[in-house]
Image (cartoon, rainbow, N blue to C red; front, side, top):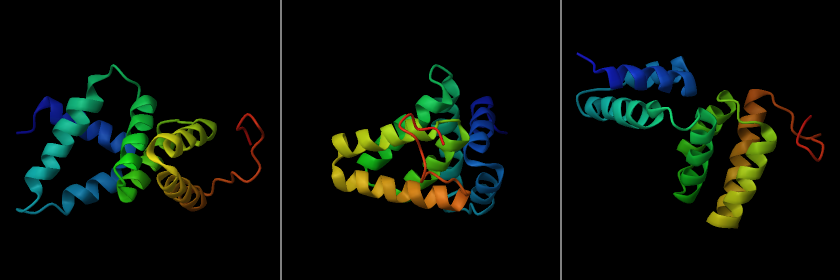
Length: 136
């Protein structure tokens, strides 16, 4: 029987990453990694994201910085899309990526901007004509 924290985590995980992604990750779980999938859902999403003190936007911004610093491009891309889903604005994302470059190093910033462009293109978001305030 799933715990309340697991159910909270599953709900938040789906809100941020999308039902399709989460359902596929859980469906692909087998005897080898099922416990890991349950742990990620219960503790990362339910035990951390589910605490409520920080907003989803704040957690997304934190994740982008940490994943860039750890050089985890696959997870960075996933959480970049989650940041957009959570309402982190394009102007805010640009500032986060600039700060990543300063604190994590220019190569991390280059990779973060590369992934951002890739996600923007995949999502049909045109950022080529942003004004100085970040609005299109």
